[in-house]
Image 1 (tube, rainbow, N blue to C red):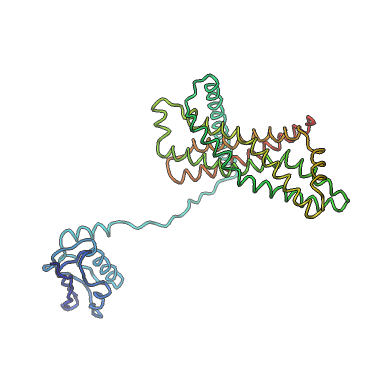
Image 2 (image 1 turned 90 degrees about the vertical axis):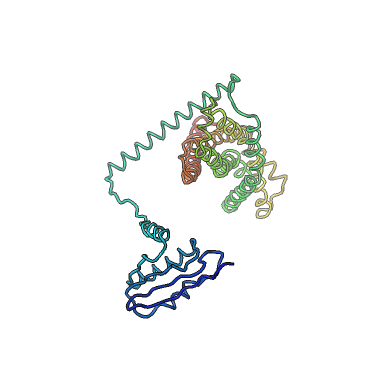
Length: 374
């Protein structure tokens, strides 16, 4: 039968001696530090211990002693460990030898303007080199695919088709309808001033098919799928799964990047087309509610304004955007470091890179199409 852990205080001059008796383990009853503290007299110079009648102890006993030690240091009282078991003394010494963490202080370094420009330029050149190298690896991978030598699982490709297509429809549908509503509402306010309300169909139709349908779908996929690609590949990098593929003689570009990139390339035009149709539908809602335009009028005006050429421009942009989203996600995932924080950084960088490339490429294509009269 276990004996309850007790403690008795004996004052010898300016020294307080604590007599620990019985069982001081987690499974037994014993006095708490608050109860022990009530035994301390008003003025003492040191605290010592007597453990001759101590039967057993574990980490709970060390916690009590550590509390007593902290109280003694707070009141500038000497803490004498000679009467404690040798194991307890060693553990207390080890605990006190562990240094506390210094507060984090960011490194302060004043860079000159030229240093900053040089550093940013160096990073840009390095990033451009990585992008070109990754583009070359993807090109070689597609050459192996067309020659029947690429190594990847068809089940992976079908899985990513589903992830990039049907699973993305709800969020793409919602955003597309809202974009159509916004375009129509903004246009309605201005067109009413000239009595040209019917041209709201032209505005929404051309805006969605040539620009907003493909761009909004791409931006959504950058945040949804591009970040997921980066996180997946980054986690595999952390777990050394990519290194294992290389050890087995399997090209990671073929096995990991090719199915993801191909799936998004195939699905993005379909998502853009779906976004176009829903955006035009969202524009009709505003046209009907605010301008009292009938469905037949809106439909006829849209058919007259939007041709297959406009749809073709939007679908071509969607293919380019899909490549850029998948490219950015896979690139940042393959560049990921070997820590959990690096995975988060890779996902964030993938989204930022994809959105920047989408906006820049859209501006370039818009200028080119305008020059060519497309």
